[in-house]
Amino acid sequence: MLAAALATFVIGHSVQGRPIEATRVGDPAAPVHVLVVGDVHGNEPAGEAIVARLRRARLGGVAFWLVRTANPDGRALGTRQNARGVDLNRNFPYRWAHAARGTYYPGPRPASEPETRALMRLVRRVRPQLAIYYHQHMGIIVRERGGDVSVEREYARRTGLPLRSLPDYHGTAVSWEDREVPDSTAFVVELRAGPANAARHTRAVLALARRYRAAPR
Image 1 (cartoon, helix red, strand yellow):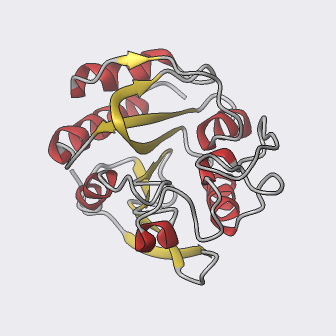
Image 2 (cartoon, helix red, strand yellow):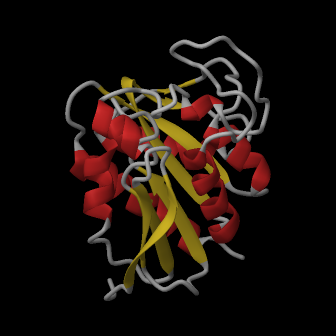
């Protein structure tokens, strides 16, 4: 374990002007980059405790990019959507589709929301080999067709959550990222309701980061 450089950047602002921050833990020149997003939906905050623990991570050869919340307005309002009523996890450009206003409203057009664009800029800047987005409350690891299933299986094994497939939702962050960054794996962890076992999930993230660090490049 090595002492890690730590820096926090404002990567964008929400509809209501709240800053969206990313904290880098580790050397920006590290060969492995891991993105972890605590929440995209404002009423699903359990992943933030995992992000908080990862801020103290010390792992040579790995830079962690940590976003506590990608939806600060939703967090303040206690809503799934952002301040304009948009489900950010339906607003990404890949397979975006029109839909009526409601719980899963995808916005008026792809990447219409500043929160979406902030995450997109970060991904394009960092190009992480691994990205994990936390949601709730299904208690599963979501099998993503664009990623490495063995990575998802290992996370499932280490956390005790089952690996399951869900329908191909339109406009999700991970489906966009898996195509934006070839040879990477981005996937969703659906935590159970209530507080997460943050220590267990943090250990799982670190184990996957070590796996990528050890892989031949």
